[in-house]
Length: 180
Image (cartoon, rainbow, N blue to C red; front, side):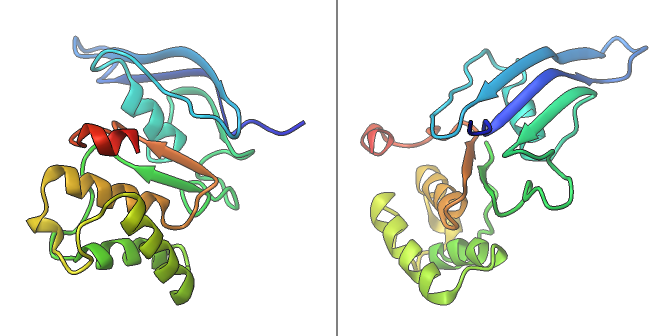
């Protein structure tokens, strides 16, 4: 039997201080299992905890209680590869350096993951075509919001991760590219 990609058990996360009026639960006793090889979408109202949950899955935040297992390990544990090379993560907000070119941005993330020069070039060329990226010599700061989102997606995909986590992936993308 193949282990699931993500398992969340009795996840609880609160914001604010327990004795203050702004104390509020964001996640309460959430259970979730995501099998490998499927596309899983989180739907819910603004503020219901989707981004918080994804941040816990990729190891950026900790739950107040409960457990998260990603690709058989706990995010942040030594050897889990999470955060790290086993997961591609595209946050809700653009997290690119404006002074980088499109090529610089994608290559930067590829180098972080230790990709060889030739493989990185092949992946960049593939992603340039797949995502209809602007010219590799264009600066990030000169791109539209939708173009920046596509570069951000390319950065998350460049190293061919086992698991891809996308937070609001289609915001700012035109309908034709969404379909692709």
